[in-house]
Length: 321
Image 1 (cartoon, one colour):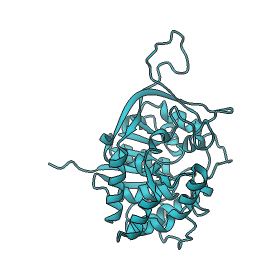
Image 2 (cartoon, rainbow, N blue to C red):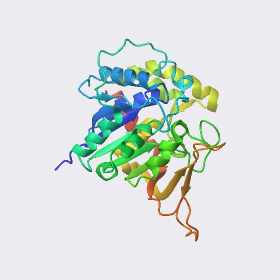
Image 3 (cartoon, helix red, strand yellow):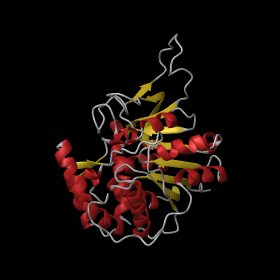
Image 4 (cartoon, rainbow, N blue to C red):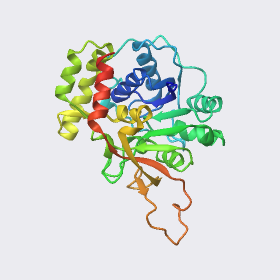
């Protein structure tokens, strides 16, 4: 008998690769998207909400609710790092699409996530594609949340490689390091995929041309929004292609066997020059002293990815849309 699709909530800050991930999720029969929750990151939260509503309209899925998330960090920080120089001022490649007709639901993102986890204990996967504020708020709000939530898949961290905001920090963790540390140490079933893995999954300039030639509605849409994202990567990384961070993380929820994992304790540096650094302790050595690492729960960290398989899945589903 066919297993029923896995219920997922995508917590997202729609820029360009979020758009790819959301459209990919809607084309993946293994998952059922039961809601989008929004957060700042690539754009401010208000615009993230607008972009989420817009993407659901494009996909003909306005039945899926959008819950607006936090506008500030977990410590009430208002000075946010917004990556509009990567994704365009509107987050979607400066296309200035018409405003969506839909509106977000009245519930906040954290309330919605907590409610769904209560309704379907053990059945919900949150795929977190931006800073982790909403998820940390859900953890603080409801003591039962970490038991009720099925899994939290995190796009975030740079494990044993340089970050992409600065040498220490990856963007999503840097967006709210205090929230990230709360999530990594909360005791839920957490899987992290860092840029050490997502940088292995690349869409080249030549691949983009394939999308342009395909008849898929979603493929055509993505071609419109990709220009800014490609030119940023050309300049910043000197590469002829873009990294598929968000779609890769999403595919952990769709097909976890495309990756291998290790178990570790992860802590996040919350201050100083290395603020946002994710440090992984593999428990190979038992330390005598009691420290901030002792008795912290394991999380799973993606170590390798079958990049060609991930890429093929991504292209097949979007070109066929």
